[in-house]
Length: 336
Image 1 (tube, one colour):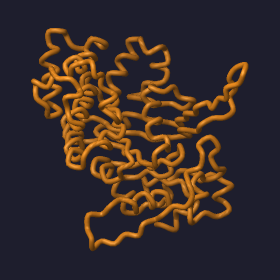
Image 2: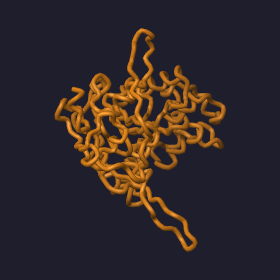
Image 3: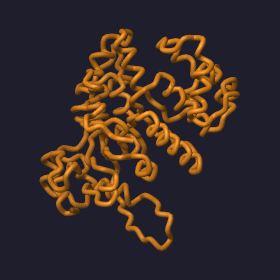
Image 4: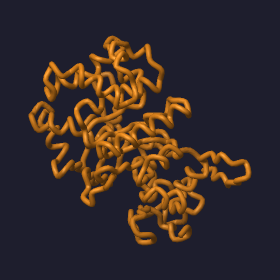
């Protein structure tokens, strides 16, 4: 498996704010904005997995949905093979270009029990994309559905069953098969193993890796489980309160984290060795409200290394200390 030097997906200055409205006697009035995603920039190459990690509520899932235009962006651009994603889908999503682009960009949702229609058989679920996109002749539907099931290590007879007849791991395999039905090149995996047992998690992660090696998929792997992220990702981006604070190759980030928030996340990862002693970093306070994020560095109210400049000026996102290891921290040089 080789990675192309040119990015397959480029995300530039992505912003998504949600209006906060107050209901009155006469009508509704906007009283604020939730800064779900703020100025997020990254790229993903062919056959590459970018892990996106952070606490619950930091904006990971929103970022994934916005770049697929499942949520309308506030500003920013996303380019897929040079095609402007927002402009293409913004025309109404029914044009030939929009359908072609949608086939190339798919998503595996977090909860397969709610993302699969309980009234449809697995055959109907997996063949529905063929009806919408008309990419496969009807006479070939059955064989294609069986092929998809085999790709995710399920049996052909499973096509006649309903989602409630499967285990959680099997349902997630069906969700992955549905994403593969239109031959995508890029897949957003939104915490695909968070609700599964540990043994089943390993199977699903190995499946994603095997599919990537065979089909040269690109993944945005969203999770708060840093162990699974390290297993599957080539690079990792750390998100806090809507912003990416650190991005680097996986080993570089885990072995030498330069941002205090990343250090705290990694310190919480369980180590299966009783003789290995780790120092747990406990962050004080709570995550600030995304409606009114702190001035300067958004992490400074909880950072043990914060100084006056941290509360006044937002740090730049750069790789001056270690090549290709980007961090947004005024005091990152302390950890090199």
